[in-house]
Length: 124
View 1 (cartoon, rainbow, N blue to C red):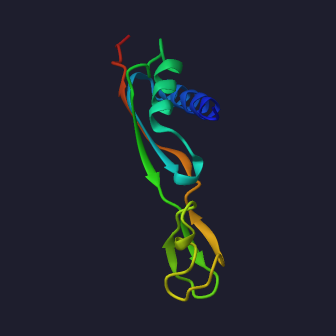
View 2 (cartoon, rainbow, N blue to C red):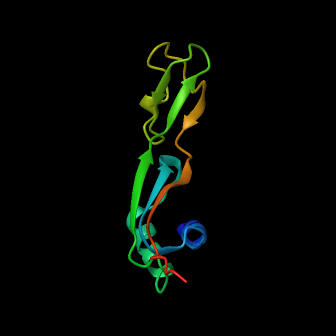
């Protein structure tokens, strides 16, 4: 259920940015979400549509780019993907060090782009 707070924050940022840009409508919101965020995309999108109802973002599509867990081995420096539920992936493929690494990616959560249509300006 942590999606509710995340989506609320995204909607707030999108609406603030749309207002600052004098947008008539937000067409799409592009997000970068790491695998470690455990976000259920369908639930996130449904919540976005619900929370954006009645705003300039109500018809916006949500485009999510997932970022996998990637780690860097502390022994040899190799960068590789790990699957948190598959222990076979926890060893460095280059030097075989087991669980001796630092996280490089997989916990991201950001808005990478907001596509909007600007309001027509009226001359005074």
